[in-house]
Length: 273
View (cartoon, rainbow, N blue to C red):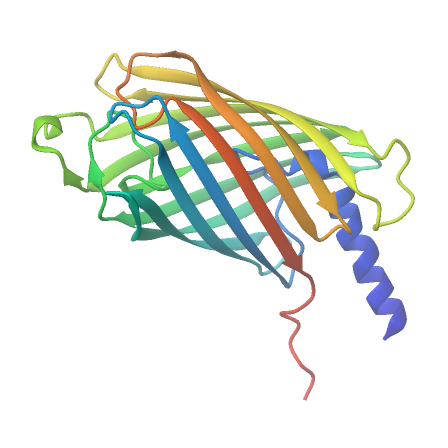
């Protein structure tokens, strides 16, 4: 039993030793470890939007790693509507890793993902966002390259709003969009990895864009962030996202993010009879 336990620990820490691949604003092509369970809470504070108020969104999340190919998330949405927090909806997310070329200190992976969301919030922005604003779905492809302490990742997806509590003046706006991202991550600390108890410090810069289909409206945001990983199981992220350019009406233009995550490994192992 002990050799198996230590093997699991080492595999899990190896996943987190490449922690610069755990991006803050986007998901990588890699999955969480098999038979694992994760709990995450993301708080986003937005300013400078069309409604001239500070918008706070809280998104608790449960994540499950079924095996090395499949994982799933379930996420809730709460926000400070009328100066009080209310539950607005939820989403489910699934990712399938279909390609993995692994070598020593590097790998290339590709995955397909899909998200379906329900949200009862009043929509009054051009931007389509099924993580916290719109009801609808998103589906796409992710590719991630890890090169020792550096990770590069890109994605492209189709997103569609299929139902919302639409502001009447926005009833005719486009309901479909193409999203694209590019992420860069660098492991800063530790300089030499020796055990899974070392704190990892990662710096990241991410580009996130959207173009509405059948519309001239689009945006491109930049999101620098810093990430801390403790004992290979607990993660703390701080990020800031702001437009490089945008001609969309958006709920928030500047976005501050705080994300806390804790993972439990091997908890879904089937008991022997």
